[in-house]
Length: 320
Image (cartoon, rainbow, N blue to C red):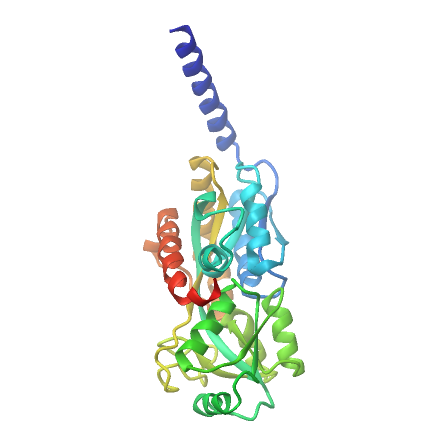
């Protein structure tokens, strides 16, 4: 009886300490881990959201880029972090869902993370070096089929959302191209601009400016509507390949065991951020969309991860 009483008292004390910590959270800066090099889609979105979250929380949210292994290096670090709310990570369909098929022996699982909030919905684009001989999608597909394996498209690393754009595109088109992984979207885009590779699979958030500046040429967007920032870029249906769909997402995650009260504070800050005029304007410039009001809850992000783990398990069966 005495042992039971002691155990109960210890549990109550632990809960009291947790509640106290959550009440005065945050007391110092928060680190947001970005699983790719600076300049890519996740990085650009993270920086926009982090700045506004910091204002809501009263402490800066500091970006730390940890590239490697399609994002799994960063997520492994995030999973090992103290569950105190001071280390969070931004993930996407690649790093937080497809990665479990591509890297089956990861030191973390979906259950290693507590979802905080979805913060953005993105649109995938295939863009080519500006002097590539094929100008339209049908010509590109014909060229690829006449030159199997000779075209190379860059992406942000196996397991990234850009890799998934590439996989979805080549499967829908029925073509054989060489996919080249980089440590982030920005280095891949740099090589496409320089002509070292034929093109990139990327999100509008990081490639649209280069298309607008005519540094690369947009081929197609995997969406059912044209993008306001790139009105001349045809959708996949308009270009004759409706099977190509590439609409993604970005979400925030904390290590498993982070107190619910802290998750709630981070969720509220994320929601305030994506509803702010500053982030909405930045997202509009990037052809990125904020979540709907019904999509802000942590549970929605958790369900999305579960759905996409299965979705990409089927798409990436040949990667095992």
